[in-house]
Image 1: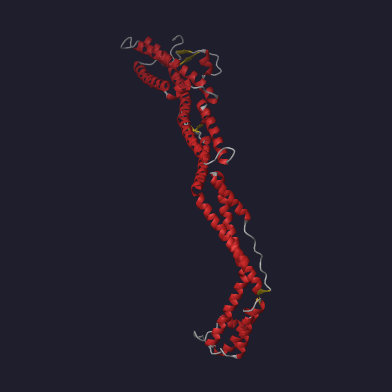
Image 2: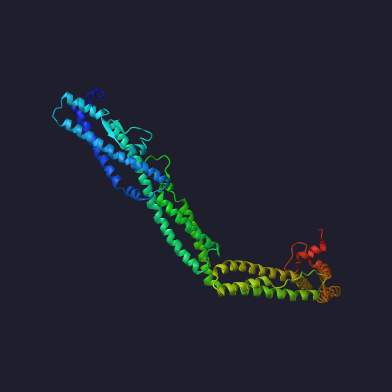
Length: 451
């Protein structure tokens, strides 16, 4: 040291004292950080773990960096001690002392020797064949800061993943086990129900995930974009979250099966009632069709299908599933049957409506004929021979069997027109009172269809 002279101007006593104070503070801060890193729970876990993949590679590098860090710190400590000893020789340092202190404090006066293994694995010295390096104290601090930041980043990331994922996986695995037991109790098993297969897949995935997280935590670390702080990022929980959602879906399916077990009897009774109502409605439609064919002539009457035997067979299968506690099979069958039973009841009602439509038309014509007869009677034309003749003709057609609806409707219209003609002199020219008003049908009949 000092052979080539001090780097730059020789420091005075005040500059030396200020530099020693600053370096002392840095020494204390570095020592505190190194001791904290040494005691970090993540570092202790890394030392004792059987690592694989990315974590193994980075831990090998980090271990070498930590070894170099302590070597650098020891060299830094020795250099700082030497500088303090020189400064303490005398109260007022001589020029020779100041030259030596300037060289020590500002020059590349610190030599650090390291093992070949540490030098090869340390990220800052990778590819270098040197087993020792020369630093100034400032450069040495900068190098220690870089090694410390990279080592701490690796340790903090691994510790964050280990703190977040294994415990959550264990909790999910415990919930998975409870769900498996519940599923087994209602017959949801692998190979027999899709949810049973899902539980097996989730079990395998969680087992593999936990093994990978324990051995290679950095494979599940997402670094924060643009962050240079050690440990900037978050654990990657994508796989865990996906399996947690899958388990929740299975739990909902199991809950549905449990609900079936609780409500099966009531739902089966309701199903039987719905199908029975459909059968009765179809029977009524078949009976009505015979009546229509006997009473109504020249009318298209749709055929009526028989009872749904396939639904009755499925209902019997559902009852069998209930007797044998095969809830996982009963659940989808009940849902399907309930929908089909409602459709069958609706079809039966539509069939009855279609079959009885001619009778409804006849009833409407009968009501219209009697309504006009009452209207004519109120106006004093009850004994009018022409109107009586037209009324009797229409009535015979409507009350005879079989009734030709087309001819009967024409007869009712003829009576309507005759009644309208008889009542037309009573219609006031401006407005009409309650007793003398003729409805819209009468006026339309008098004006004609194209009015």
